[in-house]
Length: 144
Image 1 (cartoon, one colour):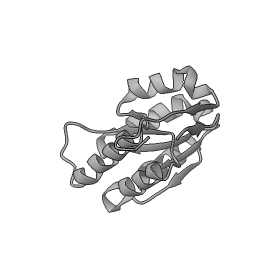
Image 2 (image 1 turned 30 degrees about the horizontal axis):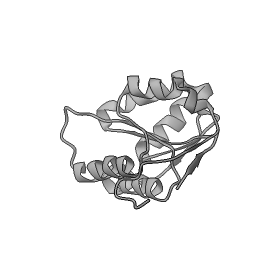
Image 3 (image 1 turned 90 degrees about the vertical axis):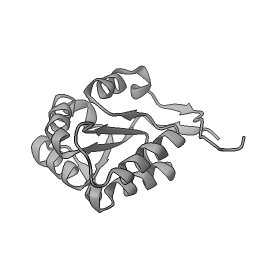
Image 4 (image 1 turned 45 degrees about the vertical axis):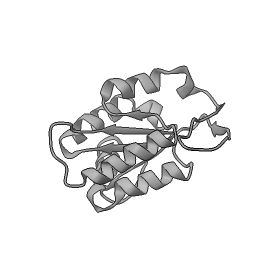
């Protein structure tokens, strides 16, 4: 089953509380690039990115209230191409099971996940980011 990845990428933007400012700064630096793509994110993160950068970001629920699960559902439905999740590995998260479920579903559906600034930078500097292409995902457990 081939998946078409259009020139306009569908990107989820998520950040734990201690990482929100870093994601906002990253979005501001790459604002001109991100403006040409379809952006969504969990509640507070999406709102802050909109307010601070002017980028159009569709907001789902806050992560602890189900936003991570909503993003995971979008992945499973084939409606996202990239997840950029500035996670905080040093702080316990009350909704950690939801975060792990999102990361797991993105891995299962072979969706690239950037967990920090450098990996996000690699994504948007990749020639694949700027192309309209078909991709043969390696969905774990899927029968050929």
